[in-house]
Image (cartoon, rainbow, N blue to C red; front, side):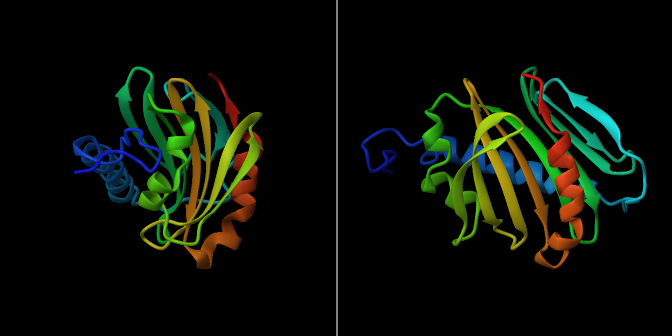
Length: 184
């Protein structure tokens, strides 16, 4: 199996290690979707939430279902299910990454996470320079992600909703975006 990209460098998303990465991401998503079965009360007052493992602070509703994946003392994922029937959610992830950041945001990687037609742009989010990706995940839900490099880690904040619910939850997403602060 060819594990080199078009520039002749090793591509970590090809070969035996790729299966582990894809399996982890698939498992984390399945866990999130399987555990998040409650319905959120959009009128509940927000509270501050901080996760030092992921390195993020934000305002959340205490009624949102929470899923935490602790991969190591410095890496993991925190996700909040805002509304169950449409799987409306926000997540923050910190992963160890020993490759250049441009590999993470390359089309080789993004096509494993997004359906064709996604857009990529540079943005500043929560005070950090980020790569902003908007499109649909492989299950057809709209997804907006902000990827940030903090070597040796890659951090991301992702918002997901069905197309039919995206506009309805845009004010909630905007409130969350305005409250996010990186703590690392």
